[in-house]
Length: 355
Ligand SMILES: Cc1cc2ncn([C@H]3O[C@H](COP(=O)(O)O)[C@@H](O)[C@H]3O)c2cc1C
Ligand SMILES: O=C(O)c1cccnc1
Image 1 (spheres, rainbow, N blue to C red):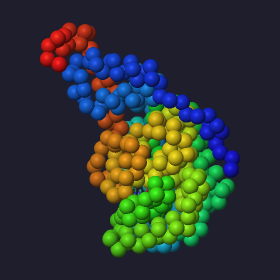
Image 2: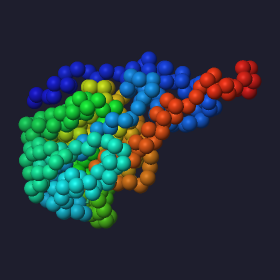
Image 3: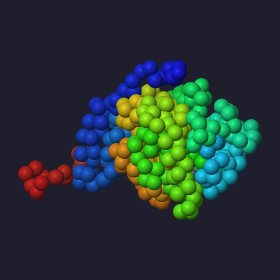
Image 4: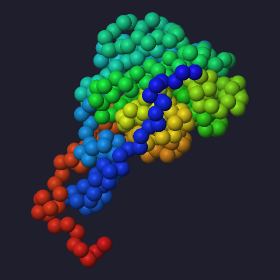
């Protein structure tokens, strides 16, 4: 299967020189060392990722990938499939949570429609990249053909390239696809060798019986694929178009040196897939929040991620990542704007005194 060109080069590592410069600067700002807690590390990490000892988040690129899921035939979501296409229109008209947040942050927002069962209106801000009306039902057969997977990956890679051309300092990927918590849970079970009961949750709001049925559906799917171990084979068998595109976008950002702020359960499943495919992509990932979807905690642990927030959010769309941006902006503003002890004439810790 031909893979996006950008994958032929290994992702670079964040620039250690800027990590060190930023670390030294944090030591001489007018505060006790470490007193800004995790905001200090956030600024240092961003300095390395942006190769700039004064990191900034003025240009943020948000790509929301949308697609429908054949597995909805199994009755695994609290909402009807038509919502995917309806929400595409809502993203475009500014009414969705991520639309509000993008405006609030002054971020670029684009929606990539990979295929919906109900036709989605042609709207400005929505890129039509229809692959098929929906994936196949992953409980019964592979969700995608090899060429559909290839298309989804490259639509994601192209979003990363648009972010690069726009000079984005941060990329946020979002998901929209009724049924996609089932696909995300199935992917994570296959990648991590976990039991569905550990990773399947209520999604948009299933009750306990619904969750138990959804778990059975995921169990059938992972039973069907047996011991398939190649990450991209697992993605083809169990993925959604939007999850595959998110994987392509994450790998494309890592290859181009663009930091990615990871959202909730679904984007984390795509991140896990990306890291299984290319372990060096991990260095380009920052984690925004822990979703209320119960399996998210396990995914974050598998990614050795410490998210910034835990607000009980469980929406997707990239919304949890967007909500974390003001914190990262605060980390940058403090790092860049605070005076040093020397410049402000403030006494630093006395040599030889209390350590
Ligand atoms: C109105 C609405 C807006 C959403 N925005 C994101 N999702 C989120 O919920 C869906 C996943 O949950 P499940 O697997 O249970 O279907 C995805 O579309 C995800 O993006 C939404 C869901 C709804 C109903
Ligand atoms: O954490 C998420 O991304 C999530 C959880 C439930 C439903 N939709 C998205």
